[in-house]
Amino acid sequence: MKRGIYITANDKVTEQAIALLNSIRAYDTETPIVMIPYDDNYQQIASLLKEKYGVQVYEDLEFIDRLSKKLQQTFGEQFFARPNQFRKQACWFGPFDEFLYIDTDIVVFEKIIDNLNYFSDSDFLCCDYQHAGGIKNVFSPKVLEENVFTETELKDMFNGGFWASKKNFLSENDLYETFTECAAHPEYFDFSQKTSDQPIINYMILKRIKRRFNIVRRPGKGPGSWAGSKHFKYDGYRLIDPKVNQPLQYLHWAGIRIEPGCPYWDIWEHYRYLNSEKPPQAPQTKTRKSIWQRIIDKVNG
Image (cartoon, rainbow, N blue to C red; front, side):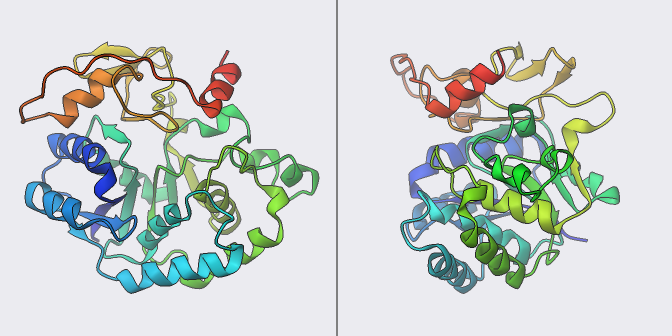
């Protein structure tokens, strides 16, 4: 059984990718990692990540191109703000029998691949409190009004930046059938904040995979992970969630620009320059919250 980690990246997110890879390798020097190119501008980052961390580029680039073209044919070229986010679906067909997908705006605080041990009782894993904020940025109320999903099923919504599953558990045809179903019912989804893949992929997982497990629902619950949460406490360059008195497994700057002055900037900066020389401190700037962040803040009180 071969386990591994997938990321998507291009040259534009080199700094974020370095921070993520430094954090992964700080706790795990062996797990193989494959990079799915986000677009055609990936040669520099691919070379750097291979040399420093042993990251390989996804081999079947023809499949990624085919997936992108099929998506555009189904939804139209202008439908999604960031259609290349769908490239992460290449995970289902890569070299790993069991895999974890991680966005580059994340750093981890443990040997993160060990979470795949939960596969003994499930076929799909996530690890976040996306569901606690309601269905905004994923679905519209139509999915309940028209009985597309039950309220219980919607509690399994997840953030598309961190999830895990098994090779070929979904087929290429499953992807295309999902695209077709979703394109026929755009009223089911909330794209108001320019989300792209997350609503569609949530629909696909809720419809097609029955054995799902959100790791934060383990006995005793699990810690949060969103960098927009203000209540985390520092433990060196790791964080503790006092609500459950547990260390965070990872921190995700979803919807937040990673820059001086952003939440937990010092954590990100630590991992970015781990084992390398840090440049002179940049001036601190106050980051303006996105509409999405303000909605979440309101929900969380």
